[in-house]
Length: 235
Ligand SMILES: O=C(O)c1ccccc1N[C@@H]1O[C@H](COP(=O)(O)O)[C@@H](O)[C@H]1O
Image 1 (tube, rainbow, N blue to C red):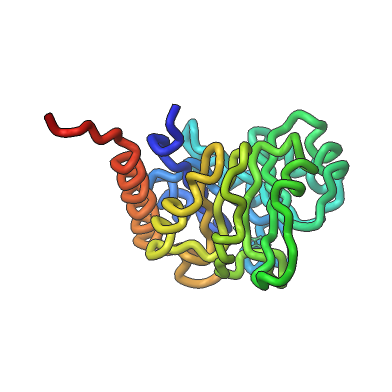
Image 2: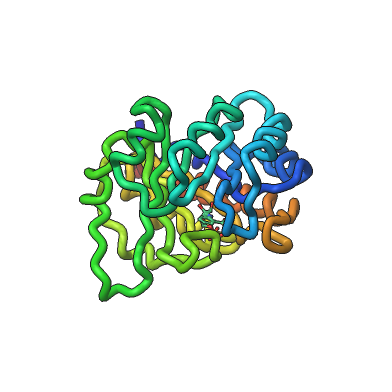
């Protein structure tokens, strides 16, 4: 299988309203995220997330995002949204992730890449520390943990890695195609995740921006698929 022929999966995160969930689904998102972090301007509690999940059709995955949540909070949220994929976006240790997921529920672990190139960060070592993670979510290291609309230098990523990755951090309809073209070849597969870049204001999504974002992802997929076709010499 050529990873260049794959369709990039898309997560729209930080949803707080039914109409935004509907807009993400109509645009073709594969996953929608709910921020269960009380300090976020996009915070929803687990009950509200469970209500919003009712809008989803089959094959669109709900993702519950946590930042340093006590284990009981994660477990209680999982009881309310049993089909959720979990996203740990704080300082969660491998042992915490194992306990929070019972070692079986799939999860994404956010790797927060320093913006300052002088600050070391070993993504391959980070990945080795979280062998059970379904994918690493690559985000900029920002104050407040995430959702800041900041990109990190994609050049900081290793040239080759064997795990699945989700590119995030400051993606927009204008830059996501370049991100995919630059970053996808380095990973086993690549998905993308966006919050700020498709908002009208914090916690309120803009349906037109969501559609533009999805269209930009599809254009990158087409570019990669075209470039992976073998050129036969003219006879
Ligand atoms: O959205 C938030 O408020 C948030 C708070 C704490 C941790 C993560 C958060 N969001 C996630 O951050 C990345 C990047 O978001 P953005 O596109 O740069 O706004 C993404 O995974 C969000 O889901």
